[in-house]
Length: 263
Image (tube, rainbow, N blue to C red; front, side, top):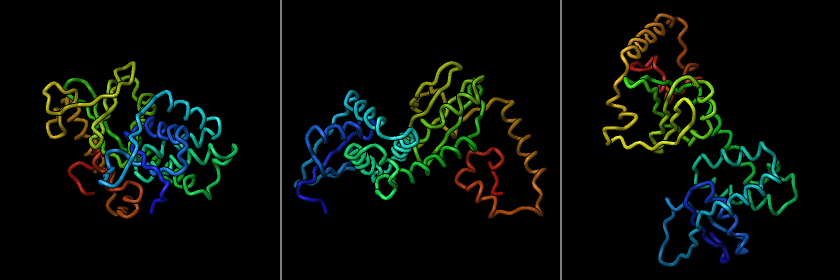
């Protein structure tokens, strides 16, 4: 139940939009705020709310202020938790910012505070997903010479995995595309670009997953890798429970050796 003096803020879902909401709350002297992302907010005829405009200048002021009061580790926690895209985390991030600004430096490690604990725990979940994407993503080479990978992670981890793949595959052009969030990153051998692809267009950089046209050598390498995997699999030592513990089924779609099999 909301207090009578609780204000309702609706923001655009962006990181800068969230920080702009923090700025607005201080500027308007609103101490109690219920924050909603516009994609999920459902107003009724009796409710009033403030549509928070995303303002980069205000957002940067808030972020710089937070960086002066929290450690680099907790800065990473803050951003990583935001990438979870969880509605409750947006509220925790907002409350966390107020908590930090309203207390002396050093309170970012007070895990007895609900927002501090929730953000840290969610950050850990997001980073587990990040590490699994880095481990399990497999590129396929298209007949146009471009390497591509389609992903569908639980959280929006593309901003966190960009550096890893740029450093690891610096000598080839590639795209990693998030099917759920409808955007991806394209490395052109020099720079990283964010891309959005309309699969209905014939000239798309990456075709729809059902119509992927692989390079002939890629098809051969895929077949050889599957055969190698089967030949090294010792049936007597098979431990499905342990295997799933280390490689959960939801990641099998990324692994070449798992295609067309339920090993």
